[in-house]
Length: 157
Ligand SMILES: [Fe+2]
Image (cartoon, rainbow, N blue to C red; front, side, top):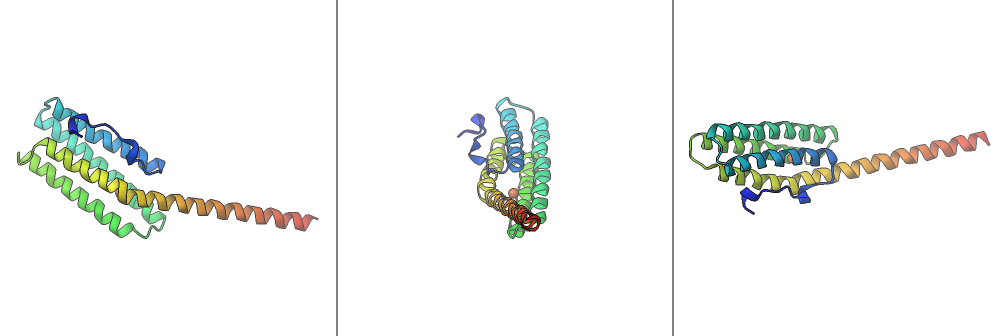
């Protein structure tokens, strides 16, 4: 797929509404850079759009980190490490683009590469964990309510 024809593919959805909504925004911001490139935008505008991607990535990763910590996710350390690595690589790419060492198409391809890789592997594992955890909590809560009701019924008979 050419970056010129960048389209959101929902195969990147991981089954967690919060993550999926943010990933779609994230993807749209990457697409904005690709569209700017296609429309021969100025270097200054491309840098502004790349900064949007970088800042959103930073916010989104912080949100995921907090989700992992709050849910006692065992894979936090490795996942967080990958977030830091991606942000560092993105900073590098933007710096190279500023210095005319790299063209915007390559920057977009690179961001898109780790977006797909990180989302479909690391974020999918996190989403599955959160779903299982929610289901266990729901089941425990339902069991507790059933036991409470049964006890109450037995007591009132
Ligand atoms: Fe992540």
